[in-house]
Image (spheres, rainbow, N blue to C red):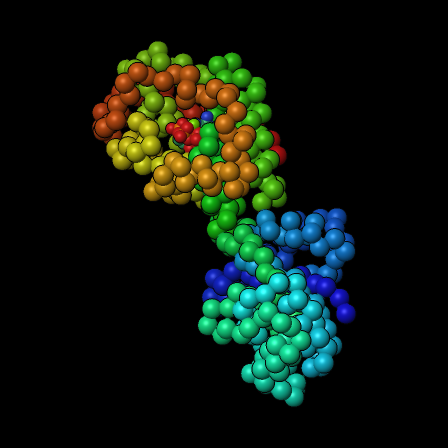
Length: 380
Ligand code: ATP
Ligand code: MG
């Protein structure tokens, strides 16, 4: 009859009890958004979601980026009778040149005359009779032939692993501190994959950081949008703050004081735009400012939860992830960022909250933060 895509969503969504409907609705809206102008039919058959469209490859490429979809199966819909099922199963398995297989049947339609075991057995026998180099292995087969009997019958043996996670927009929101580096886009992606809505803030030190550095951050936000749909990117001016810190504070404390300002502004923007939390790309021990003490001192000024999804990851693994999600090539473009311009030679690796609070008390913290928030620009 026709080819369809069967979408299997992450098993965690099944665990949501009464909230399941909310998650499903969000997922469905996200699918609709990502498919955009692609012409398609959405078919629901007893809780199973199918998509029918002309250009399967294009649809698969798009659906592979939708958080919450765990697997996409290319299925053939056939008449719910044994002859059609057997014939289609044979056809789909003939795409494989040999090996072991197992037939798995789900029978949701209880009016169907055979039970699941009987269907699997008959289909298996039919395949064995009509092929030469295939054998059955029920424990560890090379591939499965799946039969689902609902209003129609569906046959598939091709499964494509999709992105998994939770539907975007189902788990609150975060203000991602997005620099032009390798780490923060990965951190944002990981939060988004758990359903957390992203907003981004970039601290820009014009003219010490160039327009190109800002464009690079916009490009990273654009790549993340490929997974999430629209994202607000806030660009906060940071030059005046850095200048004040450099003029008034000790060199070895510059970085940590600067990081506290970033945290304060991120929290203020979060408050202003109703965002629940803050996310950074920090990983413990990666650089001088990311020691346990450094993280504690920057948390000291946060008034909402700060998430650091990369906290326990090695740099090489973060880089692999960046390549997978498509941000790596942009991240390694060599434009300066505001932290690399004013790097002290020997930054403090064990700052203490009390000593840093005192060190920065010479600055007019409140008005510096207020001014930066007031002059923040929005891009989306
Ligand atoms: P990244 O690769 O994400 O830039 P990094 O290894 O360079 O991280 P730092 O420069 O110490 O580490 O920054 C730590 C985190 O602070 C970043 O992951 C990011 O979340 C945030 N951050 C740093 N600089 C900026 C900036 N200019 N704008 C926004 N966030 C920033
Ligand atoms: Mg950086």
